[in-house]
Amino acid sequence: MNELDKILHQDILNPATLWGALFYGTLSFITATVLAGLLRLTVHKALNRDQDRLVDRTYALFLAQLGQISIYVIIFILYTHLIPPLHSLATALLTGASVVSIVVGLAAQGTLGNLVSGIAVVLYRPFRVGDTIQVIAPKGFEIGVVEKITLGYTVLVTEDHRRVMMPNSLVLTQTTVNLTDSDSSARSHQP
Image 1 (cartoon, rainbow, N blue to C red):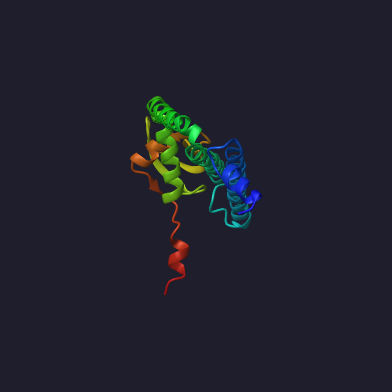
Image 2 (image 1 turned 60 degrees about the vertical axis):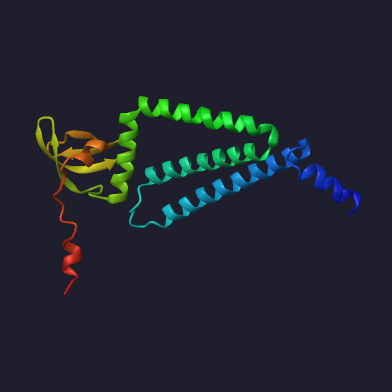
């Protein structure tokens, strides 16, 4: 083993040394940047290919940003577990993140419920933008055309041009009638 191999093995590849921590830190940052870039590129290509606009750009871009942030956080946590002097920092970060997530979760139950429900509306597609639906509102039944589905609310436009904003958690927990006959085209092609 020559002297250069010995230095590489002892200093750069050893995460307990300063050079090793810097090497693995740089490697972690490059890995996170490449993964986040690939995710962003994949989402943008998928959105540009989506001619029928089956995927809402707002949701796709929001989820892509959330995924990119998650990549950096996960890589950072793995890095802190790899470097021995940072083990206590990693434990403190995980503990702190757990406490913060509980506090934020309790404080934002309604908002987080609407966010998760919004994702469920996009995934399950009980209705789409442009569909006419009937929902129960505080003053009775409302019939309207779905104008947009945001992360927290579904917006309907009624015949008298009122905008009815319904929290997504309410849309999923009540009976919603889709008055648009979206299956008529499918039935006309069947023998």
